[in-house]
Image (cartoon, rainbow, N blue to C red):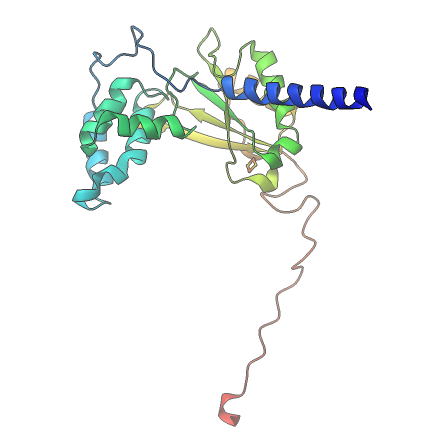
Length: 251
Ligand code: FES
């Protein structure tokens, strides 16, 4: 009995350690000044993006400019090669006329904002339950091992980094990864989903990207069309019957 209690306790400790190490392995939630990331470095939206900023702001009442903080951070991140230095966040705070800390709060809360450099291709593995039970842990492990990096580290050639995202709304084709390509600024920015992936398939995708190829995105399962069931439809096999119409004149 005592041995079983001790074993259960040990399993609980191991589980909480695993959870803690997962939390700690995500990008830092605080800022440390570095030569390439400090508030003395100038940062502003490009001339093209200034027009986009005006367009984004036009969606909100002038006394609710702060509502534009997420699309503006997104635009700043696209302009800055996929990550947000502190001076870019400060520039956004200036545009929406709030204290910088209000922008930091948003950027540190949402995992789609990167506050450290990422690779040309930032590979985001979905870690939420449907993808997890369909093998996302094995997919992340395969990517990290193949690229020789830890989560959120960039490969030496600057080509790849691996991060984790929560549900990206594609659970029907779980597990899935997203490949964010920030190398062409906000004009050529790409954010492609690769669905129904396996550890083998994600490595093939990585190698195709390395060779400059464009792996077809969407489902990687040849037996499935988009989000349809594998092997073809099992319901709605014929035109649906129209609803019965009442003869209104007879009423
Ligand atoms: S759980 Fe992965 S896309 Fe929803």
